Amino acid sequence: ADEKIEHFLQLTISQEPQECRDYVDQLRRSGMSNRQLFGDVFGNTARRLGQLWEDDRLSFVDVTIGLSRLHGLLRDYSEVTELWKAAGSQHKSIHLMPAPGEQHIFGMLILAEHFRSQGWRVETEFSIRDAAEAQSCAESRQCSCIGFTISNERCIATLTDSVSRLRNTDKWSTGPILVGGTVVERDTALIDVVGADGSANNEIDAVSTADCLLKNANLRQASPENRRIGT
Image (cartoon, rainbow, N blue to C red; front, top):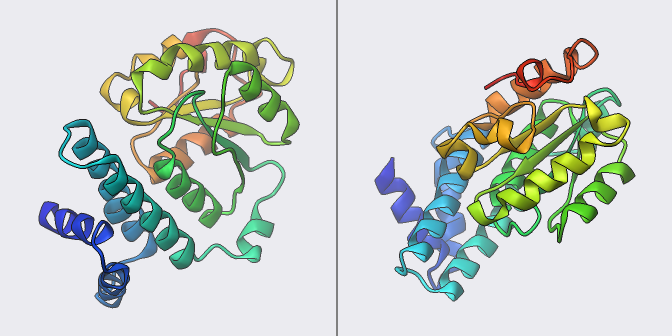
């Protein structure tokens, strides 16, 4: 599996973009589902690009090219249709956004596609400057859940501020708020630190957690012990 990721990563930054697309077509012909393609291949490749950049083994230009091609492939191979979007009822909707200052959003895009494939209506934000903007965006959407992604520890404070602001509003004082990303995977205690309700390690768990939180939203109490579900 690691060799497959390394091979695909090299294709995403190569001078021949068609080779990258040909390899994806080969994986699909071998029987790989879109969920496996998006999560296992695209997602792990995006994370690997970030690791190599942090280790100074890839340039910013290489990483930008690689992520740009992954974005294009995700868009081209996504099976999201208007039927799927219509299937998301008003009581199953989620607003996904990066933590303020967070720049890595590819995992969020994959997560959005998976929620849509399960019949959820999904709203997304691609860049959030600060906690005030996070609150404004959340209040402008009519969604039943919020999901934040975070992969940079420097964004913990702004994420905490964002959740705190939302908790001071009528709707989100007890409304379901999820957090996810590599920072949370390394330290699940951050779920309580930022004041969220739950998290998940992958796309399938994220939908299950959101479902659980949504079904029990009216039964939860405001205490952190009762709010923490699905971890």
